[in-house]
Length: 316
Image (cartoon, rainbow, N blue to C red; front, side):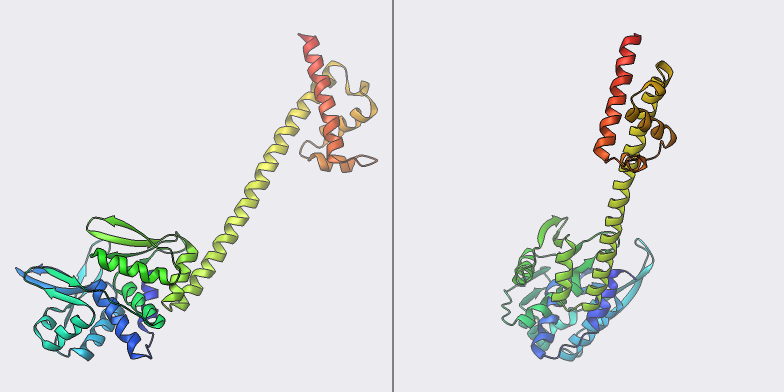
């Protein structure tokens, strides 16, 4: 199962204790999820989802208010991969008074012959009800990428007014959504891990929130380890390259004038470098008696390099 599916399963198990929250969750589902499609030369009002738990939740909620207005069916599809798609047909509720009242209560005026849905602004006052409305919208049209791979949440709206309304309610909780157009949809999205965690908290998907936080911590730790390893690898490479150059200078000096003819301090460090080509400057300093710091060793190495350079100039 995908991370999105896990979130939606968790949300469908939530129980709205307040009737106002249950209503606004359903409003979020219907306002964002209902679409008009032509099937067999007839227009139908549909809610389509790939999630069984979402289809059951929507069907049972609507049946409580309009007992005979919704039909549910499922079909297998091979798009991308073989899975079930659930289709709830709301066409019947547009022909019933209780169905029309339900649509009107959530700010929807459906005209099937003209394939047109008009929305009126839904003014939600209570904070808990705004949470419920956002939760309903996510159940209908939301998805979250696997946080192991990337941080991305998006909601696809067929109506710009609903997209703007949804963004304003997200911003009520100090979230920072963005919007783009993709084909005939308005896509509201966020790409920051912390924003997604905050959104999951708003809609009460707390198990998913904890799972994502654990993944974020592990990813941060892996990234930190990789940075340390990369840094150490770069330092090691730098040390090896410097050592190879130093060894080559010392060998050249030895061939031309002999290490034995160098001043005592330079002779000592030259021998140590030849015997310990893999050692860092700090490690070479600790081998000296008395010990010498990294800057002191580096100073002697520069002197050896200068001697080798001078000998090369004379040899030309």
